[in-house]
Length: 392
Image (cartoon, rainbow, N blue to C red; front, side, top):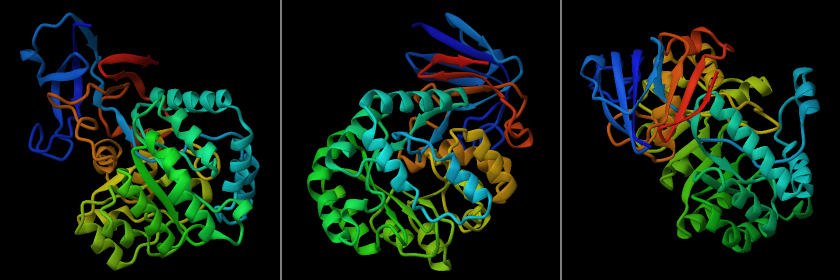
């Protein structure tokens, strides 16, 4: 493959605190990046750049780490556009439409599910996402959950077992029986294809006792813990996630002071999903409150067919700045380094020697333009493991 030099960079976001301008983004001007064997080998002033076999001219554009989307639901079939239209007409979001997607997903072939996953991963890559997590949760049978994760594992190592998404119709009125299935045969079949275990801990889904049982059994099977919590209203999910050492608690829309304090005193990341609030006309999380308390915040798309059918991390950055009181720098950090923290990764979301050479070249001089020019296709080029993936 040889070496590759990216230079003529107007602004380089490294996410290495204490370098460059000293801020959390570690901004450097007139910088260059040397890539060897899929890794960042050198970062520094362009005038001191080592020789390389090949060169990419950033043409004065900003360069930043590839986005890390730490929360998505890509393995599904069907369409819920009519549900979206109904919400826009005033119907409240309750999460009940998940069962519609479950029916369509069970009926789909492996080939159909694989095509959807690959389409969405490619769509996300073209918008700068180089690391993506995806969950099961639309099968809700032993066989369908296992095949969902097997298909997901073909495109990402960040796979999450979400058999506890909702109680399926055939177990209506028998949640304890379904939790027994999730903790037993379903987990056993899914775990070989999963890195994480997750539960939708919300009213209408799973309570704290059920969530604890599932997450504890998942931990014993060697899976890391993630948690959907406090999206639809106040609840025990955030406190449970912190207690169990979850890598991330996701949504975090309705938080008490105790929830914020618990997150601030832990290593658990609060992953905010503004695409869901946009698509459901729900209140946005108060990112400012979390950041001011010292909580580590990540941004992710929550890409799914019902409540947030977007694969665009730039869109989520713009929403976070406009609606959640984040600064552009905070939002970009949350969409890159923050997502890496939510996945407990230190090799992505950052541009420093030894990190994976995942980077995005913007058709703009600064990271500020991601929020300043919402909806504009600013991703000029994407490199994944040092290999150019797509170019506008």
